[in-house]
Image 1 (cartoon, rainbow, N blue to C red):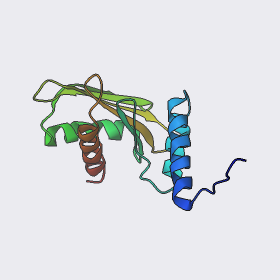
Image 2: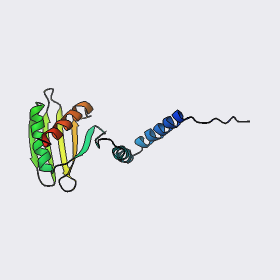
Image 3: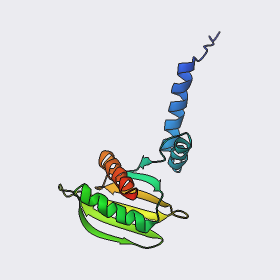
Image 4: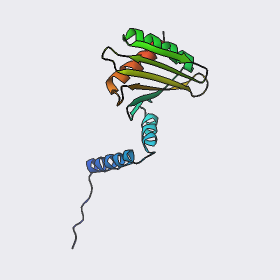
Length: 140
């Protein structure tokens, strides 16, 4: 005879977390899970595969100008910057020579999808700081 065991409330949470972890490992599911988190009240910013990604209320040209100002505030040496109505890119280097790339793509009227990558493999803390500074510059 096999004994039946009930799953307690705390164990359900662990089971759901384990299943969500399995979804993250499946190709194409990362955006679904990140989107679900954004819909559940998160800030709408995700760190995925070495990039900080989020949406900002500005056209790509506005994001480019704000990123250049953010680089100045954070003392990131600007290498190049360019923008159009469709997209923008700002590239710089930190004092330790880490490459920083900010890209923006138009995502509707006066909105852009923004991605920030630091170095080859990414740096979540520095990416978050740059993202926050760009948003602050947009509101000046």
